[in-house]
Length: 141
Image 1 (cartoon, one colour):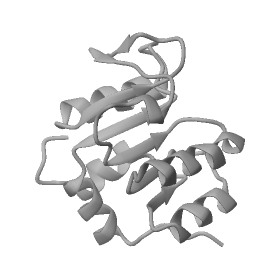
Image 2 (cartoon, one colour; image 1 turned 45 degrees about the horizontal axis):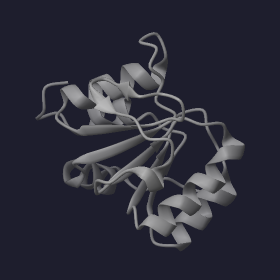
Image 3 (cartoon, helix red, strand yellow; image 1 turned 90 degrees about the vertical axis):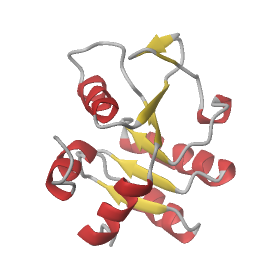
Protein backbone atom coordinates (compact mmCIF):
# COMPACT_ATOMS: atom_id res chain seq x y z
CA UNK A 1 0.00 0.00 0.00
CA UNK A 2 1.39 3.37 -1.01
CA UNK A 3 2.03 5.98 1.68
CA UNK A 4 2.93 9.59 0.99
CA UNK A 5 6.21 10.96 2.34
CA UNK A 6 6.22 12.74 5.71
CA UNK A 7 5.46 16.46 5.80
CA UNK A 8 9.12 17.40 6.31
CA UNK A 9 10.11 15.61 3.10
CA UNK A 10 7.25 17.22 1.15
CA UNK A 11 8.25 20.65 2.51
CA UNK A 12 11.85 20.05 1.43
CA UNK A 13 10.69 19.02 -2.04
CA UNK A 14 8.51 22.13 -2.42
CA UNK A 15 11.45 24.28 -1.29
CA UNK A 16 13.96 22.81 -3.77
CA UNK A 17 11.69 22.62 -6.85
CA UNK A 18 11.89 25.53 -9.30
CA UNK A 19 10.29 24.21 -12.53
CA UNK A 20 7.06 22.22 -12.57
CA UNK A 21 5.71 20.55 -15.69
CA UNK A 22 1.93 20.39 -15.30
CA UNK A 23 0.76 17.40 -17.32
CA UNK A 24 -2.81 17.98 -18.43
CA UNK A 25 -2.79 21.74 -17.80
CA UNK A 26 -6.03 23.11 -19.18
CA UNK A 27 -6.16 26.46 -20.98
CA UNK A 28 -9.60 27.00 -19.40
CA UNK A 29 -9.43 29.22 -16.29
CA UNK A 30 -12.37 27.39 -14.69
CA UNK A 31 -10.49 24.07 -14.55
CA UNK A 32 -8.62 22.98 -11.39
CA UNK A 33 -5.35 22.40 -13.26
CA UNK A 34 -5.39 25.98 -14.54
CA UNK A 35 -6.20 27.51 -11.15
CA UNK A 36 -3.52 25.49 -9.37
CA UNK A 37 -0.89 26.20 -12.03
CA UNK A 38 -1.71 29.92 -11.81
CA UNK A 39 -1.23 29.75 -8.05
CA UNK A 40 2.09 27.89 -8.47
CA UNK A 41 3.27 30.69 -10.77
CA UNK A 42 2.20 33.28 -8.19
CA UNK A 43 4.34 31.46 -5.63
CA UNK A 44 7.37 31.76 -7.90
CA UNK A 45 7.51 28.41 -9.66
CA UNK A 46 8.05 28.21 -13.40
CA UNK A 47 5.12 26.25 -14.79
CA UNK A 48 5.56 24.37 -18.07
CA UNK A 49 2.25 23.27 -19.65
CA UNK A 50 2.25 19.72 -21.05
CA UNK A 51 -0.86 19.20 -23.15
CA UNK A 52 -1.22 18.24 -26.81
CA UNK A 53 -2.96 20.65 -29.21
CA UNK A 54 -2.40 23.70 -26.99
CA UNK A 55 0.14 26.38 -27.94
CA UNK A 56 0.36 28.35 -24.69
CA UNK A 57 -1.11 28.42 -21.21
CA UNK A 58 -0.49 31.06 -18.54
CA UNK A 59 2.05 32.81 -20.75
CA UNK A 60 4.24 29.70 -21.16
CA UNK A 61 4.72 27.69 -24.34
CA UNK A 62 2.94 24.34 -24.12
CA UNK A 63 4.46 21.01 -25.13
CA UNK A 64 2.69 17.85 -26.28
CA UNK A 65 4.82 15.49 -24.17
CA UNK A 66 7.27 15.70 -21.30
CA UNK A 67 10.00 14.57 -23.71
CA UNK A 68 9.39 17.69 -25.83
CA UNK A 69 10.19 20.11 -22.99
CA UNK A 70 13.67 21.58 -23.59
CA UNK A 71 14.06 22.80 -20.00
CA UNK A 72 15.13 20.97 -16.85
CA UNK A 73 12.01 19.77 -15.02
CA UNK A 74 12.18 19.41 -11.24
CA UNK A 75 8.71 17.97 -10.74
CA UNK A 76 5.89 16.66 -12.92
CA UNK A 77 2.43 17.51 -11.56
CA UNK A 78 -0.09 15.10 -13.10
CA UNK A 79 -3.69 16.11 -13.78
CA UNK A 80 -4.58 13.01 -15.79
CA UNK A 81 -6.83 10.00 -15.26
CA UNK A 82 -5.46 7.21 -13.08
CA UNK A 83 -4.97 4.86 -16.04
CA UNK A 84 -2.70 7.47 -17.70
CA UNK A 85 -0.34 7.80 -14.74
CA UNK A 86 1.75 4.71 -15.60
CA UNK A 87 2.99 6.11 -18.92
CA UNK A 88 3.65 9.50 -17.30
CA UNK A 89 5.76 7.79 -14.63
CA UNK A 90 7.71 5.95 -17.35
CA UNK A 91 8.38 9.27 -19.10
CA UNK A 92 9.58 10.80 -15.82
CA UNK A 93 11.93 7.88 -15.26
CA UNK A 94 13.29 7.99 -18.81
CA UNK A 95 13.84 11.76 -18.65
CA UNK A 96 15.38 11.80 -15.17
CA UNK A 97 12.63 13.95 -13.66
CA UNK A 98 13.25 13.52 -9.93
CA UNK A 99 9.71 13.98 -8.59
CA UNK A 100 6.09 13.39 -9.53
CA UNK A 101 3.01 14.79 -7.83
CA UNK A 102 -0.18 12.90 -8.65
CA UNK A 103 -3.03 15.28 -7.90
CA UNK A 104 -5.83 14.80 -5.42
CA UNK A 105 -8.44 12.27 -6.50
CA UNK A 106 -6.01 10.37 -8.75
CA UNK A 107 -4.77 7.03 -7.42
CA UNK A 108 -2.59 4.49 -9.22
CA UNK A 109 -0.73 2.47 -6.61
CA UNK A 110 1.24 0.44 -9.16
CA UNK A 111 2.50 3.55 -10.97
CA UNK A 112 3.38 5.26 -7.69
CA UNK A 113 5.29 2.16 -6.54
CA UNK A 114 7.11 1.98 -9.90
CA UNK A 115 8.12 5.64 -9.59
CA UNK A 116 9.35 5.21 -6.03
CA UNK A 117 11.29 2.05 -6.95
CA UNK A 118 13.00 4.06 -9.70
CA UNK A 119 14.06 6.67 -7.13
CA UNK A 120 11.49 9.39 -7.79
CA UNK A 121 10.02 11.45 -4.98
CA UNK A 122 6.29 10.63 -5.15
CA UNK A 123 3.21 12.30 -3.71
CA UNK A 124 -0.18 10.86 -4.69
CA UNK A 125 -3.82 11.81 -4.14
CA UNK A 126 -2.90 15.18 -2.63
CA UNK A 127 -3.27 18.72 -3.96
CA UNK A 128 0.05 20.50 -4.36
CA UNK A 129 -1.57 23.88 -3.64
CA UNK A 130 -3.20 22.68 -0.43
CA UNK A 131 0.08 21.17 0.77
CA UNK A 132 1.99 24.29 -0.22
CA UNK A 133 -0.34 26.49 1.84
CA UNK A 134 -0.11 24.10 4.78
CA UNK A 135 3.63 23.42 4.72
CA UNK A 136 5.16 26.67 3.46
CA UNK A 137 3.77 29.20 5.95
CA UNK A 138 6.65 31.66 5.59
CA UNK A 139 5.63 32.26 1.98
CA UNK A 140 2.63 34.42 1.06
CA UNK A 141 -0.13 31.98 0.09
